[in-house]
Image (cartoon, rainbow over all chains, first blue to last red; front, side, top):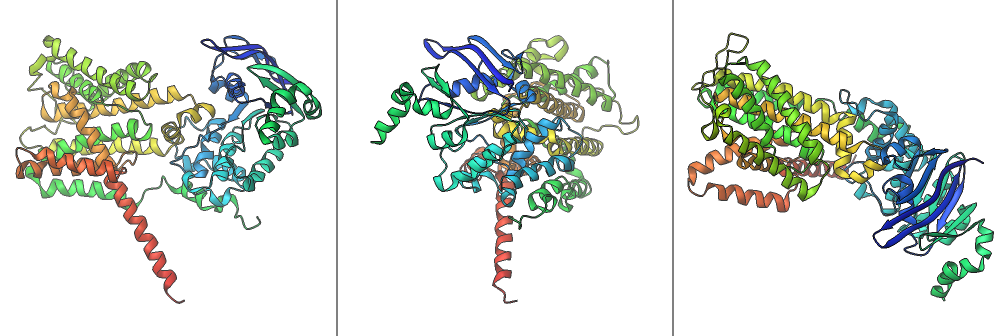
Length: 252
Length: 343
């Protein structure tokens, strides 16, 4: 396997707070990789560094071997790095179809077009409808976002990002806030992603993580604490102590 | 899931494929505007002012209603256009009206582009204050540079050439102005209509609805906004230029907060981000203020203020928003009635 998205001794400071400490990390092509860690471990900060929302204080980010540390967010999306948000960021005043139209139009380069009606881009509409059908959203394609239950809104969140056809997909707690009765729809959608995409998932839900991931990285206080297969991580006594153990004591 | 219809048959896809098509009622404002010309020949001065206000409101709708750029300084561009035409005419450099509009559009567009490059790095209240400052700055320049702008008195008796070399502007009897402005308004309106239904217009709506997400889908957000702001400024400049040509004078009122606030009120009243909100809002505002000021010469603005409070509290979509709601309620009632009927 070749490296898709890499970081080398990545650091980020917010004043005195050292949110990311010397993180050296590799997301490989076709990976199913999970990033876990207790609250405040710097997981979302790390995603923001990968996508270019934040610029690191030190260290480099590489995409397919190319240094992209200083490259803007929009350009990284064009290269093939896309993410979903922990809290839905949707176009609430628009229909589901119009939401997905937005990202596909950007990807195929239709969005700067001023002279033709959006409705005449049959290619964009067809692709959007295919994507919605795949995610079982076609029957609500005409609905406005606030009309949908939260679980399906979460699917739209995923659909917008999949419209970008990313090579590296970063999922920030994709099932957060979804009632467990509905969460299987999201898990199925993630399972059905093309094998070639490298997927990094951040989640607290250990069932989801252990079911999905082939590799797990544990982040604690901004630094990589452990890395390995789910079996190794599950058996690692230190990880159990700082993270899994914490969870079980809470549960008990 | 075999019940799912083919993608192109989906109602959402059909609706999106059709939404840019002209509806029969879209001809109504233009028929009414022409009817006004024949029915009220003595009110064509008022009519001209109204049409110019509509164009100014449409330009603001593009920036504020569609792209969500919060601005309280849009009169900066109205004034830039008006002063461009005024100064060129007063100093006998350029007096042909139609090419004068083009020059005014370019000048205002450039002012919009340059100020937009700086301003649109900010959002919200900061942006609001900066647009106000830009307008104040221009107003003060127009006030101070009295030698070329006429200062506080402005420039009057502008020598504007006849349109196509044939149709004279008559300040007392505004029939030429009215038709000229109506023609320009139609062209500008069709341009904005094309823009808002295009993929570019769709992406502006996306920026308004969720800027962060637009960044995350790879849109060059700032450039899209700057371009939109510049086009909106150019259109406002055309409106200002028309005002200067139709009245044959230009003064500081074209650049003032009063004008900027009025156009904002008009847009909120009619309904922003709806294209036709500008037309409905301008007609409602100007007709209301006309009659209210006759009925209560001292306190007529109180009536407008109360109306605005009601709109802001109960009808965020403005007059058109209320009409929309009534329309869909009517549709549901009809559907309900049909279902009740035994078949």
